[in-house]
Length: 638
Ligand code: BF8
Ligand code: SF4
Image (cartoon, rainbow, N blue to C red):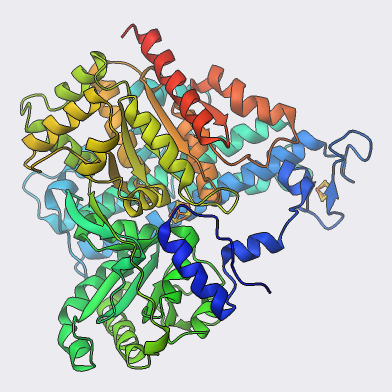
């Protein structure tokens, strides 16, 4: 296979490390993208079906060949089923993550897991109050147990009339009522995912609109799983507060044992951070002058970055490149968005690739089975493996990247509201609401989602964000979008000075100075990992409640310029269902069906107030998002 000679990225580290890949003839994600061209036209339109073994079937998009699969399913049914199954898979990913945290918290509440504790008791108490769990005069352990048990009810409840606790307690009442009226509120996360799989199997639901509405319930189950995963993680590991750190592949250091945590679930990465602190001397004794250096990749990286200031090495698309530095001693992975190619790349170097979840193993990796009751022991084994690998490095192959940026991160909803409270302690939301109403802040945009080889890595994020900031839109980011901004130096006060419009800059400066940051807030506020998208909804819900309106009335938009994964499909869909104009820069695999395409881009607006904007061109996307914000302002009369 040819080596990477043309990585498609805005990230300077990608260009640097792809040269190394080319010289060593190691294929990267961009090489494999090239070998897949041209990609299947039927798949791109969503009109191929392989859900039974009479198939695969495909519909001729030009209307000349077959217009029905062998069973009689037409293009609309096939597209709708494929899409809804993606939403179910996304919901399964996020809510499985949430279940893992909730089960661990139950055991923390019973004192069964020595490696964990409730680090943020105030957060747990706030969550308990929100869910109706008694707190008065009770010890924190029993409260944690009860909160976790009530959370797990969202996976168990069999009463169809009773919606999940976490969705009804996380949205404005008007939005909950609207979703209930449309019969899309999930009552049980697992049952919702199972129902989508059942209704989309051969010979079941064939009405495309009904199939998509079923998928939408799954997307809202995804939101439910995210809310609970984020809030319980904060209680167990701490609620993020602003912290200054660094991002990009230059955070990998020559004189350290470098360990990358890659994946999503903080249960393991948190303990690795704790244990590494106690093993610094051992690393130094092995020759690593600067001890152990933990770095993050993808959403595990975002989680530990926000909570502990751990430097972020990179986001999804350049995860292979971390190994190509020749100085990464171990990459520890758990679940989701981990490239199966990593084993092959790691085998070309001294790097140990370590899988940890029994349901997520990979060729070329060493598996160290992770269970919370032995968390510290497991983490020690992994750190020892990294120290051992460090001694096997080939100095001639070390290529420390020069790309590294400062990043000010850690903007949980609590941190944002805390910063605002420094201006108005009695009514913290007032400064934000006043500045939205008077137009100093035109609106709020949430950047979320992935990297995708179909776009220039990080490029759309950068272009759209700069345009929006210049037009005085407040910017929030999560997931690999946040990773892009951190790597490119856009999560800094300097970026605010350089790119924000005058009125936005004035607000960010006033809040940043009042909060003791000594300058403006960063141009883009890092809210966390993908599951932390719920933090942005928490801020939006607080504003909506303060103004007594529903979410679709506010000047809020979302953008995922490089949406890729099934999880992103679910997130984009719930964003629409919460009422937001939601931009995706990737053409979704639905355009083979006019019914489904119209439903997502137009019909959804009538039902939910939100809709998808499909626009691969970032400049045009920025214009459309700005237009959507102004339209909402006008409707609100502000
Ligand atoms: O959950 S943004 S590529 S790493 S799916 Fe994956 Fe997409 Fe990144 Fe985090 Ni989210
Ligand atoms: Fe073909 Fe129908 Fe089977 Fe799909 S379900 S593969 S369209 S026969």
